Image 1 (cartoon, rainbow, N blue to C red):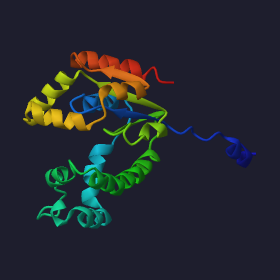
Image 2: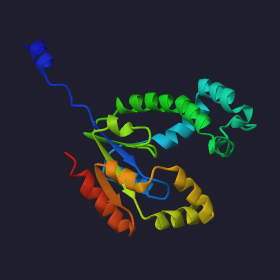
Image 3: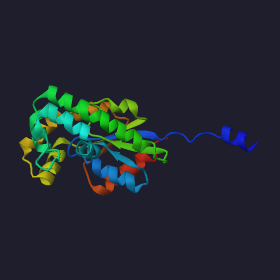
Image 4: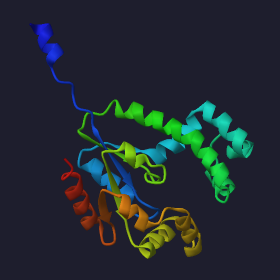
Length: 207
C-alpha cells in the first residue's frame, strides 16, 4: 500500500516563469531586488552571461575566433568595452556573438530552474522581447519609465553624456513596442516607495 501511495502522489507543479525586463535606466534591477525581498528567486541573465563568458573555455575559443584575441584582456578576462565597440555597428557580428552566448545562458538557466521550489520564479533579461524569450514565460513583466528620466539615471550612474545614452536607447526596442507585448507593467517615474508598492501588488496578483 505504501508503494501505491507514493506512486499516486502528485508531482510538485513546476514553477511559473515570469520574464522581467526593461530598457537601460528603467530600474529593472531595483525591481528584481524588491522581488527577492518578497521571497521569490530571480535569475539574472545579464549577470550570468557576464560570468559565463569568463568561466567557459569553449566560449572563450569561439568568441576569440569571431572577434579576435582582443576580446579578452591580458588577464584572460572578457573585455566588454572592446567587444561592445566591435559589435555596436555590426549587426551580423552581434547576431553571431549572441548565437554563442545565449544558448549557454539558456542551459545555465535550466540548471538553475531545476533547483527552485517557489511557485513563481523570475528571469531578468534586457532582451526578453527582442529574443522572443517571453514566449517561454508564463507572463512578462516590463519596468518602464519616460525616456528623459531613464537617460538622466544612466548619465548620473555611469557618467555618460546624453548623446551616448541616446545612442544606446536608439539601439533598443522602443518602449511603446515593449508595452504592447508586456503582460504586466511597472511605471518607474516616481520614487522607490511607489516602485516597491507597484512591484508587490503585481507579483502577488499573479495566479
